[in-house]
Image 1 (cartoon, helix red, strand yellow):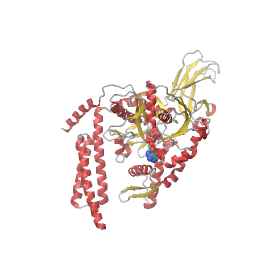
Image 2 (cartoon, helix red, strand yellow):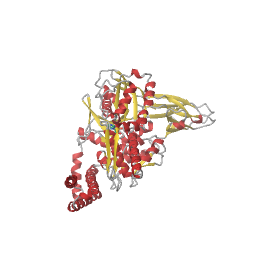
Image 3 (cartoon, rainbow, N blue to C red):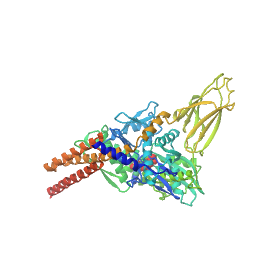
Image 4 (tube, rainbow, N blue to C red):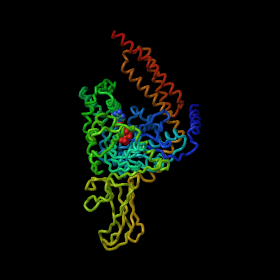
Length: 630
Ligand SMILES: Nc1ncnc2c1ncn2[C@@H]1O[C@H](COP(=O)(O)OP(=O)(O)OP(=O)(O)O)[C@@H](O)[C@H]1O
C-alpha cells in the first residue's frame, strides 16, 4: 500500500518537473568552495536566480545516504552533523589535484570525510559505504543543482552555462571544472576567472574607466586581479593568488583553538572524534562570521562528550591575532600582481572586494591600508561573481554587445629540458587566447619518437611545477640526429585550457599522444554523466522524502540532547511520553530511509509535533528552574 503511494507520487512529479522549452539564455554559475550561485541576464541587468525557498546561494555540499540517495545543497548541509563522514564540502580545493600534493595532505588530516588516492594518483572522495567519487563528480552534482534552480526560475530547460574558476587555477583544475559541467549535462561555453567576472558585474553599469584591483577571498581560494577597464573592454593586466587559502583555513585555526582549550580544561583530546569535530567546525565558522559584526561572541556546545560541554568566549581581537598570518599571506600576491601589471599601488583607481571573507573587518582594514584607499561597496561580495558570469554568458549569446573580456593565463607554460630544467614558452599574464610554435628535433641518430613533458608554474625546476601533460611524438622518419624538424604548437584557449599539437616538416600531422590532464578517462566521464542523468524524477521525490526524514531525525537528535541535559528537571510522565515519541519518530525515519515509507506530509507533521511537544516540556523545565531560583 505504501509502495503504491510512492509510485503515484513519482508519476505526478514527472509531469510537474518537465519544462516545455529550452532557453537559449546562457546562465552564469559561480561554483564556489563553500557556496554556489547562479544568475542570468534579464534585459541589460544580471540577476541572481533564487531556489524554491528564496535562497540566493546554495552550499556546495553533497551528501550520500546509506540507501544510495544523494542530497545536494542546503539539504546536504543540514544533515552533515549526523552523516559527517559521507557529507562532502569544500571539495573544490581537491579538484585537479594529486593525492600527494602538500595541500591535499593537509586537508586529509583535518577533514571529517575520507580523501583517498585514485588509481591515477588523483585525490578522490570515499564514503563509508565504499563508494568513490572524483571531486569533478561532486562539482557535477552541485552544478546540476544550480542548473535545476535556474530551470525552476526560468521555467525552461537550460543547456549552456559560463562557469567561473579562481583565476589562479591551473590547467588541470580548469579541465576538472569543465568535466564537472559535462557531468551535470551542461555545455560550459566559457570558463571565466572569478575576479574578472566580478569586475564585469562592477563595471557594466559604470561609465567610469580606470584601473581596478579585485581582491577575492572566498571559502577556499584567494585571487587578486588587476584590470584595465576602458570603453567596455575589460582587460586583465595581471593576476595572482593562492588556490589553497580561504575561509576554511580561518575555520581550521579556530577549530584547533577550541580543541586546545578543551584539552587544557579537561585533559581530553577530541581530535579523533569526527562528530565532535564537525560540530566544532560549524560553531567555529558561526563565531567567525559573528565577529564581523560584534566584538565578542560565545561558542556553546553542550554535550560534546557524554559529560562535557564547551563554553568559550571569543573576541574579535583574538580572532585577528590568530589569523593574522593568513591575512598577511595575501600581501605577497598583491605586490606581485601590481608589479606584473607594471603599476604602482597609487595607480589603482578602485578596489573591489569579493568573497564572504572580505566581510571580516581586519581584512577590510588590511586591504585599505595596503591600497591607501577605501574599497568600493558597489558590488555584493557574495553575488558579484555569478552576476559577472551571467554577463559573460549574455555576451556569448549575443544579448549584450560592446563588452569585451581580455583575460590572461595565470601561470607560465613550458616544457622540460635536459636535467629537469623548466624552459618557459608562454609567460604568465599573457592575454588569452594565445598560441606559440616551437621547433624540435631528435637527439639521437635514427630516433623515431620523442617525449615532451609540458609543465605549468613559476619555478626553475620542473619538479616544483605542475605536470599538465606528456606527449609522445611517434612515427618520425629515421634520420640523422637534428635533421627532422617537428613543429609543436601550444594553444591556450579563452578558457585558459591548453591544447598541444604537432606536425613534422613534411606538413603532415604527426601522431601524438597527449595524456589528459583531468585525470578521468573518457569512459569514466561518460559513466558519471549517465549516473548524474539517473538522478531522475523518481530520485527527486526520493530526495524530498530523505530530506524530510533527515529533518525529522535532526529534531529527534535535538530533543534527545535536551532530554539528556535536563533529565533531572523533567517530570516522569513527560519524560516517558517524549522518549516514546522520539522512538516512534526514529522508527519512521528508518522506514523512510529503507524505502518502506514515503509520505512526506507525515514526516513533516511528525517533525512539527515532536518540536511542539519538546517545547512544551522545555518551557515547563525553564519555569521550574526559575521557581527554584526564586
Ligand atoms: N560575515 C562574514 N564574516 C567573515 N567571514 C564570512 C562572512 N560571511 C561569509 N564568510 C566566509 O566566507 C567564506 C565563503 O565565501 P564565498 O561564499 O564567497 O566563497 P566561495 O565562493 O564558496 O569560495 P571560493 O571563491 O574560494 O571558491 C566562508 O569561509 C564563510 O565562512
